[in-house]
Image (cartoon, rainbow, N blue to C red; front, side):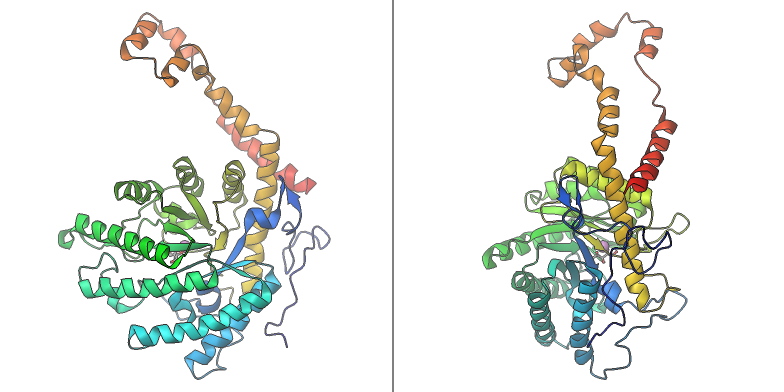
Length: 449
Ligand code: XUL
Ligand code: CO
């Protein structure tokens, strides 16, 4: 018997008109775009915490969410086990091939870590059975080292050694689960790894502890033969005033400084980029340039609100920019995917809205892929940038790039050039036209789709 009162989500294309409902207009999983199936470019994942645990609370009100399992179970373990079946039917009906979870999303805590682990293992058994029967895979799992009050001052950056030890013990078991379920990646989001106030904080000492923690995790992964790609997920602030993994550039500097750059890549999130004052594309490009693009948390913020909203991505311009970077890279990351770290708005409270919001996100990314593929096909950005930097391809520019130029050779070259020649060496970018060209591609690529 079906658990969700909803049929498998079909691809409807343009058949059903323009109004978005319970069907995909652009996401056609097996359609080949730029040499790969859509589903292989996008590798959509569902986030357990938002989809099966989130009650749509906000700081001013309790949850509004209506969910099919509510009120059916008095024992929290029974509810946790039942939710696994709801989850896998959801993935299958939606057509998402991956999911992601924190250890604490899936099972209630006991009093000791041993009791907590026993609860967790029972639910993991049920997840493993469902993975086998449905073929849905684990994009990544992670450990919640921030919800419980013991993590009030952080986990691996906590000033309290017992809490550090607890975090290590909890993480160890989480890595064992990653191994058991064949996780493709393992994510570390530093939930409270930062500070509220610098006056009571030994920042360097905390960062050294955090680096040591990652090395221990890597050692243990090697020991148990876990080959999931380790990923750090940067976030600028929230819950702490300053998170140590502030943004991609800060995380890359940390990885380089502590000899972790060869074992960790980045999981980047749209709304986190905005909290750091960046676009999502900026964060992705920064990671690509350093060779550490790992995976993506797909969501968006709101221009008018300055915190982590985790909205489902519906901004086409943004998904075009993300998928342009992904196409240029050839993949999201060696094992990356698009995990919807997103929740429906508090006013979208029906169970059905979980499907509707995921469809909206999947279609916006599929449309973004189609537009980005057309931009690539016509080499719009490639030609524009090749032309913009062409003065480095020969002459004085080539001597700068090949390392033969010195301050003296450059001085000799430039010393007597008049201002008029220098101004003539620069050109207008026609940036307004570039932006509208992107609009034109969005309109045309989707009209043809
Ligand atoms: C929090 C966030 C997390 C991570 C996993 O802002 O993004 O959900 O993705 O811990
Ligand atoms: Co995230």
